Length: 427
Image (cartoon, rainbow, N blue to C red):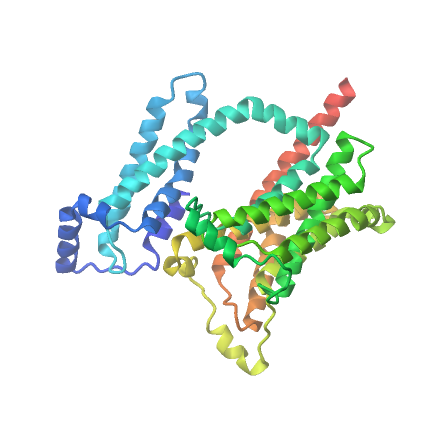
């Protein structure tokens, strides 16, 4: 992660070692008034510099977890914050050599603050995982593993609905959002691309509806489809209504209608589809096809294909330098794009590792990782055929990293189920 921070801090790696330039940049850096920088600070820069170092603090406390167990954690937290501050100062000093960068002690202070916040979160996460959270997770994995998949889908829905998470409690702002809302479905046509609406609302909530029904029936065997659908409808209405409390968002009745219909279809149809003999024979292949299909939709929509005469020009637009597009992008937008791609690629690694043809190999982790890279590269290369997409090595790296997380999660889940079977047999 430290290498990632360094890479992101110096991209596109344009440096000027002219002594006069270096002397001038250092004089600005050292004479820069911290008070003036704070007074004229950009909120997006401050937030992005803090967020960048929160994982740094979490990971550093994770490394120290064995040492701080049962001890006072104040010193490790302060040391982690100091490491973040020193690291930030070194990076800002190095940026004096880059003409396209602005060095600032405020950014270094934000880095230290992010490391401090991350250290506190890391301590809480480590202690929670060793305590009640771990026991709860083990109980869920043992009795209702599909509940985790339900939470995963809901997390994606919430992030997509409320980004950029600009909460507003101002009455006038909320009233403006309410006035922009559409209470009559399709009164002004589709408020977004219709195929995107069907996938992100209808198809996703079909899966959510099925998972709600499945988990309710595990708790109460006599639970009917009606109760599951009512819960899904209440959930959809709550999520859509919550949008009016976020700046730039509005309530759309067609979102509620399509999501509710999708949940109904999922509750009615998916149990019958899952019961089909060919699905029972090869469930891993079905999951693999669904995940790859979702990635194709995510990366190739709105499917605005070019004519073949444009193909040579499209190849020249491929971005070979990793994370080049993120360098010039708005920080929060880049962060959300990164989160969305990692979120979508984690299931890819998980389902690839579950394939029988991968599990029987001598090195399943390596074979699965290679297959995920090939899939990501193939989907990204297909973007040369779309006028609204620009292929880049960045997405291949992000999808491969997310898939690797899925691979590791599958191995952990398989070890847990194996240990659980041994424990059940012993009992």
